[in-house]
Amino acid sequence: MTLYIIRRFIQALFIVWAVLTVTFILLQLAPGDPASMYIRPEIDPQTIENIREQMGLNQPVFVQYFIWLKAFLTGNFGFSFSHMRPVVNIFAEAIPNTLQLTTVVFIVQIIGGVLLGMALAIVKMRCIRFALNSFLLISYSTPGFLIAIIALWIFSVQLEWLPPSHMQSLLYEGTSWALFFDRIKHLILPAGVLSLPAMAYTAKIFYASYTDVLAQDYIRTARAYGLPRRSVLFKYALRNALLPLVSSLGLFLPFLFGGTVIIESIFSWPGMGKLTVDAIFSHDFPIILATTFIAAFSVVLGNFLADVAYLFIDPRVKPAYEV
Image (cartoon, rainbow, N blue to C red; front, side, top):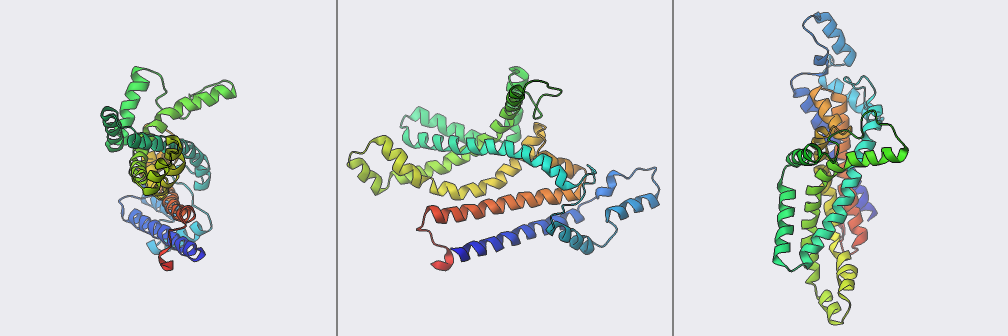
């Protein structure tokens, strides 16, 4: 198992390096560069050349690549051209905001998805099953930006129950508890919009796994021995049905990161997603490369941890080199 973990770790590092290298090449091929945000018609060509030289854009591409790669390996993500601050300092402010959002989404996804999947597998009434299936289908297939717009129109514009944007009310003053509940109110809409497709995705996977487990011989044997229905459903079937869900959670990370880019922009949530969109529009290469690294690292790490966790949860699974 140790050899398998080492191999998977080396593969993860290679994948992250490949993603960053491809992103660097694509940024070089894209029209425009970071210096374009400072260029004005009244600026003379010599000044423009000085700006490009200060940014290191006048050097050959392969030289820029190795300078960037050396700095990246030492933890130096560079200097933001649009914010005029080190990228690390910007991330120190944005990452906690995104973690607040994604942590809530993850909790709602797991709890809500498992409960909906169990209800879909246990409930036999056609009308309820039809309603649950319709809800899951609509939640998973509707684009996130459309759900966000509808939610804003209903809960912020028409009902005026929830704030439409930002993390907290502007110029808000009050006790720490009042500020806490104000933050919760701002969190409900973006977290709810992100949770709907995530919860539907989890519910469908868990439903398929749960129905398969309920059809196993040992479940029928447990029922034949007269064990309580609650004990059979929750103690014996639930644990084994969670195994496929563990491996699928790593695949959910790219979906979640992509969703935060759109939802954070719509709700003006000051996290990594909004930061990425702003960096793309301003051609801020250091931030784009750093956010790409975090996204790739998160996805690869999620898959790596899911694979390792699966080995510990189900000892029957053997890596390919042990078969």
